[in-house]
Amino acid sequence: MIEAEGLTKRYGKTVAVDQLSFSVAAGRVTGFLGPNGAGKSTTMRMILGLDNPTAGRVSIGGKRYHELKNPLRTVGALLDAKWVHPNRSARAHLAWMAKSNKIAASRVDEVLDTVGLTSVAGKRAGGFSLGMSQRLGIAAALLGDPEVLLFDEPVNGLDPEGILWIRKFMHRLADEGRTVFVSSHLLSEMALTASELVVIGRGKLISQSSTKDFVARASENTVKVRSPQLPQLGQLLTNASAQVTADDDALIVSDLDSAKIGEIAAQHGIVLHELSPLQGSLEQAFMQITGDSVEYHTGLETEAAQILAPTGQ
Ligand SMILES: Nc1ncnc2c1ncn2[C@@H]1O[C@H](COP(=O)(O)OP(=O)(O)OP(=O)(O)O)[C@@H](O)[C@H]1O
Image (cartoon, rainbow, N blue to C red; front, side):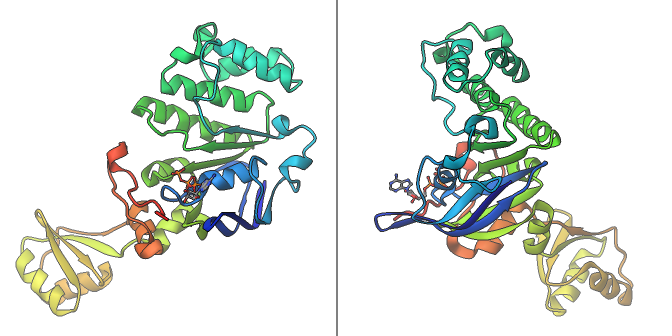
């Protein structure tokens, strides 16, 4: 369990994190969502005691990081996958970490196996692909068998196979009862990975809720309608003050629910071939909730299709 209360971090005039309060429960994946520069990394660093809050506090199982007796056995983190000595082998890197944290050497081969790196354990980590480096970073986070795991943008730059592996791995960790807190600016990815979302923008909390509720609360209320009498139906719906747009052989209708659309069609003897409410995407939900504070490009899982609006001080 992670709990933040009024967590605030200022760097000079920049307020990176602003009165942030949220909680992260065990046994599920909680997504930490926000555009670039929203304050996710700063928050994660404060959780891990790498940065001190200007105000407020954040605790893990009721204790601040510095109060933890065995930090690596309580919380593991992947902040920067490339943080390894390039000439060390994966095994040597983990063995060094285990030794310096008084963790049994036998854990090294266990975690290598868990993340599927056993066959390349003797190779130099500097030659690893990003996906392999991420796995090594996750192995390091798991060394102390911690109850709480933090991952900062773990799928950034990964290919689809790597993304899928990370997603499944997070689910597995949560199913084992661990607290899994994962930051991302990729809404589409978080929709598939996290069951709970802590959403921030410009350092402030925008919402904390289940992923399902977040979408339901904010998604546009639109309905897809198909009919052999589309122009006539479109006119009737417009007359009823609905917003109507054409979409191939269908109409996308907003500001009027499916029951009302069905009634209007029936009153005028119009045949319907389809009448389906559309659930908004997480991207739409984010845009609606955050208003103009961010701008999203959606769809592709590529750098080009990701968030565009840093806070820009
Ligand atoms: N050490 C620092 N000194 C000054 N400003 C900082 C520092 N670290 C972060 N900031 C600023 O604080 C704000 C939040 O940054 P942070 O990296 O936490 O955001 P983020 O949500 O993790 O974004 P990204 O995904 O781009 O890392 C940004 O405006 C950033 O420029």
